[in-house]
Length: 414
Image 1 (cartoon, rainbow, N blue to C red):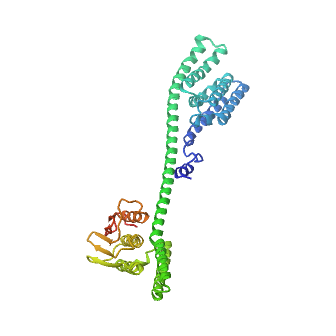
Image 2: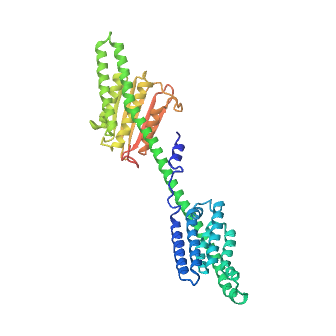
């Protein structure tokens, strides 16, 4: 599975909505208050008891109709103007009409009906239905035999004012609900982006840790095993003709094996490398030179420039690992060299390591020769704001120079 696939899986459709419906709780409360007030008005109205009961029953059915169908149509973006919203709006209008036909006091429910219609339908459709709903009380008065000059004219101003207020209220509600939905969508998008960033950070951390583990294994265990194999092969060659030399090679192989085992244990526990815990960086460099001379016969000299002092552990580890890699490259690629030089330079603000050999050299641009070891060396140095320079050419030997801040660099870690 690719990193992109893992990230998408982490932020997939199962992500629970955080604020998609939270804002709608206020509208639920408003609708509930409107229902209670309208019901109380019906209880105290002068109409017949049966008519009041039918009107209250119609409004109660409207509440159930809203809970069963209308609320989800209003809340879910993209589905508010669909068939379900139209069905809900038609049913709500019919129930409101029944309630008003049986008792005019039910017209107070317009305070709840208008917002419902505005949030369920497209603006133009909602305004048309809202106008019809506001005209319903006047229509009921006319159906009951009211005269144009007296009853109708008494209700008309109220209906016209209700229409104007309803349209303005509806437009405001439409804007508020749209902004609330957009805000909820932004919050959800923020959560998804945050989770995506976290997933990418975890993936980057895993990749960085894998790279670090590869460098540590290459710089410790792999180089130790390579040395052991070389010493054992040398011992096999000298076993008959030079048994004393063979025993010396085997003893050195055992010493390297013990050091590699210690490195492995310290690598697991993330402590200081044994070579630096038991001695200084200069002493560790001398042991590397002695090991190179013993294994290959190459004369290896160690020199120090400047005042030797204890460096931060991050700096010492980078220089030691770089030295180990440079020595391993001499052993692997420059076995026919006659001499090698290791120089440690202690400056005021920087520390430098130079490793030279008079082997066959190579073309610096040859990526096949600049394998994982040199790449790892550069990565280590860059982690503490250092740099690695390799100077080489066919037939002219090789010089590796590592320069790092003596204080440990900006990162301060290895």
